[in-house]
Length: 237
Image (tube, rainbow, N blue to C red):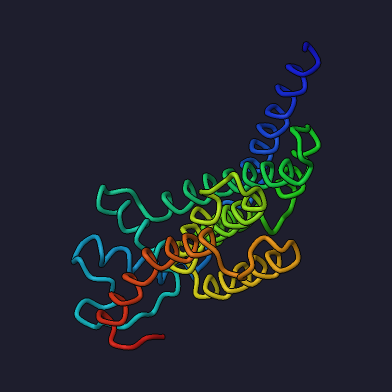
């Protein structure tokens, strides 16, 4: 029993150490890329004029990161500079990604293990991952949402977890609202699930109730946003 408690604490201590390492590593770069300026201007006009436009009155979609831009705009409503919001949210989303990767590995191992913290350390020491934690763009938000969806996809291998696919569908919808390639990721994940159904013969049909719930959780969020976007800017893509 003593060893079990010690192992459990060790898992969390290692994950916390990886999170601290990531934050320290990320802010050694401490920069905002010039590409973030576009989102900052759209966010400012959203906060000040209620318009997602670069120039007020000109309804042109010049950004590709809706959800991130809206989050920056909400920060500007309460007078938080977008540079600060971007850095704080980037770090927070990156830390959540470490936790999700940790959980994902433990699902694969089938048991709690300190070794599950290894991917978190690898991410924390990665210059690319750390750099774009503080770069001002939506990179870490998108990464977090995709990893959450992946965790749901893996968790759905257990039929008892009925919320896994709806959770994955919701995360993928938000990912598709964060970056355009989120739709492609959703299609790939859906295809993986269908292939998994076929290989394990879970259903006589490839699509059962869990898959329908997952698709519904995606569409109930993404479809209204897409309809609004089409109405607001006047073109689908």
